[in-house]
Image 1 (cartoon, rainbow, N blue to C red):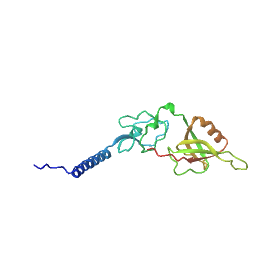
Image 2 (image 1 turned 45 degrees about the vertical axis):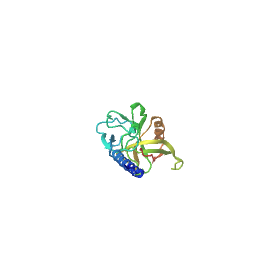
Image 3 (image 1 turned 30 degrees about the vertical axis):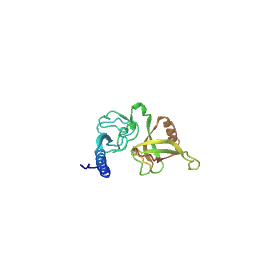
Image 4 (image 1 turned 60 degrees about the horizontal axis):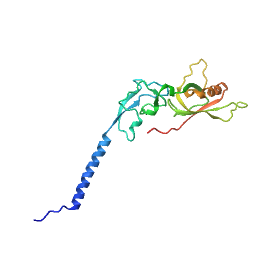
Length: 200
């Protein structure tokens, strides 16, 4: 009786088909998985204590390390924000801490001139100041505070309004004295947005 020999090419082809099917299945499984994370409902600033209405749980398809973000199983209520989180952004673990780690104070700056359209609540800016010179001029400006965090614009509610733009910012406590000194001595103050990398 003649033995039936299996064609090696047929066997290899069958293996390739099986591998292809398994590969497609794995891709579908990986892309269909979602992770529950917390997303900021509004801009969160350092020192804010997260409340129930400040964040919402959302299921997202996320690539890469999901352990960099607060998982949906954990509750963020009562946690303290230590770095800005914009509205709609996923809440990273690095933005959370305790109150002792927030060493910032709020100051209001009267700016000479306008501000960039990109400056908004939660923006990071450098504060520049130029001391007054002779005959109404100003000397060269230097960075007074780096990486200050914008809280928002302050409305002028005084009886006599001026043209200055008032901006409330968070600065390190160690820089408060320098800021107050610049304000008291009529320095020309400007803010410049800082380009920050996008958090993955």
